[in-house]
Amino acid sequence: MEAPWESGFKSLTALLSEFVVDDEKMAQIQLEVDKIEVGVINQLLKTSTTPKVDAFVKILVAIRSLIIPMLRPLGAGAMTAFGLWCHYDGIQMDGAVHAMLDGSFPAWGASRHVNKQAETKAKARVRAKANEDFSDWDDSDD
Image (tube, rainbow, N blue to C red; front, side, top):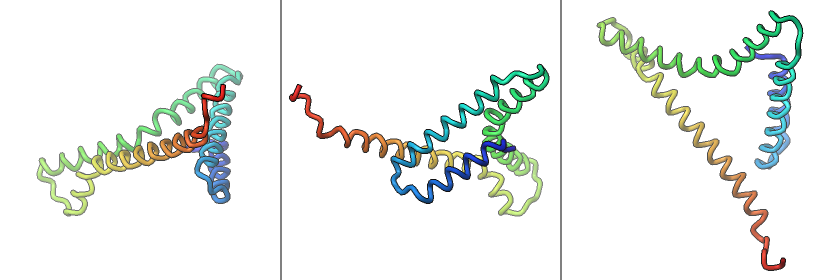
């Protein structure tokens, strides 16, 4: 479930990433796009029509922000639980299917770890670049 403005923001970011080669500049652009997206969502939540429509919009925003991001880890956990249940209940499955079911949650955890490490390294590069810009600053001149 993707809102109409989300596809526009994603395509804009994808287009800009083709032309912008500087990581720091792309991070700034992404920050601005994220701010605009949050502003659109806030404006959507502030808009008042009928109570039923307002409630429906708030429910959709909550589903988009809270429920959908949880589907991947919950689905991976359910697949692992089903695989373990089949194993302990003696249900016969192909070995590859069993390995996929049993390893889905640990694989999600490893994927999450790798993504978090990449985000941390990108933030560290931006911070290092910002600190590098002020390395020639001399307080003794004051």
